[in-house]
Length: 309
Length: 246
Image 1 (cartoon, each protein chain N blue to C red):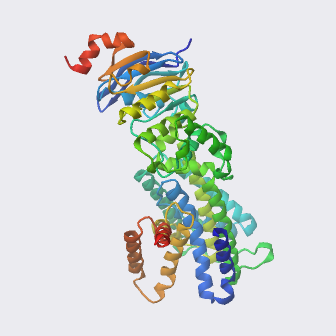
Image 2 (cartoon, one colour):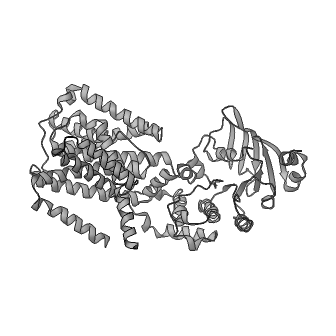
């Protein structure tokens, strides 16, 4: 039944560009990118209990690296993409090593500080990043000779990446390692006494989460064909964190739903309302009041209650 | 024969206040040792030092002859150390069997497996149910911790520790908060622990657990006051002083 519902949902997503206009197809593509980004952050926040406010680092780092390799080094996408993923994941390993010396609020502050360093660097290191002008003149890749320039083509590309990302993240979460990760979130001391290396479990998760953040970064730079320091800003990290919390931290679908809410409000409502940020704030306040653990668990509970009546 | 546990001049102070004050003791392999002492005697601190939750200020901790005071808690677990907690420390949203599976995983290589689903590893869950059977909870295996009674949680605490197949087992007030019937049930469990497992047990009351141990150590203000066989310790005037204040 559940599998049937999911298949139906994916089929609907596949059919979507056939009847939707370009605006909505592009909006959906952006939601896919934000969904990968939020899902990667959810590994840390939801399953690891480690709240990061610096997740924009991975999107920005991967996007800048890919853009720089393409523009300045003359590398093709096929070479630039894996290098960008590799570099970002290695930096995630270093940042994780630093940040995981603390937990809780300390961890949050260190992730914030480290990502602010990158943000400042992107502004100041003009010879590489072109500073406040950002890097433009980029192209989208053409895997197997298929151009991704049309909205629908990019949509399918992003959809494929989302499906693969969520599938692998789901496998990760359901594995023994995933169970150990949740254990370290709930009772780290007990987990250590049971023989689990809490620090290493967290570090591996940090790196894995950084990797999927980098994947989102590549999608991001391919979509916009442009990268600016604001992508590394606190706002981007905070928006992802809001998506995770609003959708439901520690659930697979939560970050996707959260990303859809944020992106829809941002892109759709901002066309009609200048103060769309206020509306976004209001929506979050309502979610927190009526579904404190997020939309996905909240709706599930309502559904169960309806079923009992 | 090397002792299972050897503490040598162990010290730990919190903000100048010594919680463990020059504690030295030896527990032979296979022994059942009871550590008693009034509130604030430093019993749980002593356990936290042995398991690696706390770092000692000075002194040595030897497990089966190996100095472990610089090892992390999980490394000590891999050397055969297991413990239970005075304040129940379980995973409340997860089922009893999942709790025990987490314990089993702790010492298995497959705890690093991030690809195959845990639920597909039927052997682990079978083993978890077998261990829950040892503490009389096989029927409750699928229930979440939050839905079983306090006494049953105490049994899960012991099941988690048994799942680690420890060589040295530390029981931190395993009888705390239980009714007399529940107590005798847990005592039977403790008496049923395989004889090659060394057991060190903390109790707050003197009388409740005396029959479980051959040797008893009395702790007071972080110091070992009396140590000896059950009879010696009960007869010692210093024991009475600590407990009766006379």
